Image (tube, rainbow, N blue to C red; front, side, top):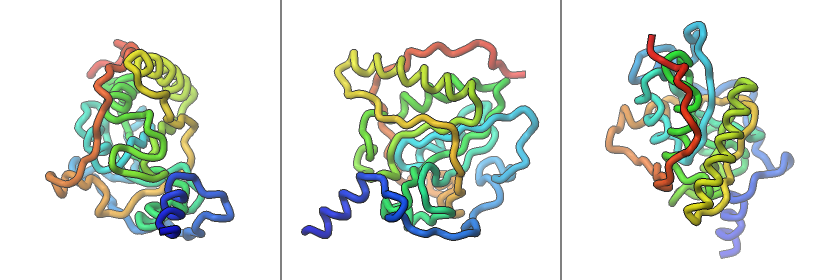
Length: 224
């Protein structure tokens, strides 16, 4: 019983560097092309495209949400925000790598705004749950936004503040979402990439709060 309690505590607390698994120097094998679009998963991506990363629980359902969004070019799932280099899925599940499950979203900002992606993110999961998302418990399932530009970072921080007010007005807890410039992104194994394209009836744990995100969506992103 002590062992189970100890393991649960580890999964709910980020590891210290001396506790983290060692990982490996080389990337783990993964897919080369997107299962839905057929585009190269690792690029090169079209000129003018931008990248952002979102963690909102299990990455299977989150990735499908974004690849179905018009203006999104490529999505991929991976591990981010931890200590262990080039981790495996099994390693991240122990909670001893420090990584969150995230979705890389490559998008055309002339066709979909970052604001639209933020709306999808905030309204499709519960960002108040800390180290869990529904029945998925552990540090890997925490809510995160990792940005690649100063503009994305500011917009994400502003949106968290605005959505936090909306949630508290509805009696929900404070937002626990981490927002930071993007750390290294480690692509997950091939069988996890576009998982719900390969297994359409597979597990999807996405559940929103039912509270609308109040941030305005700019009208500058229009289809060409």
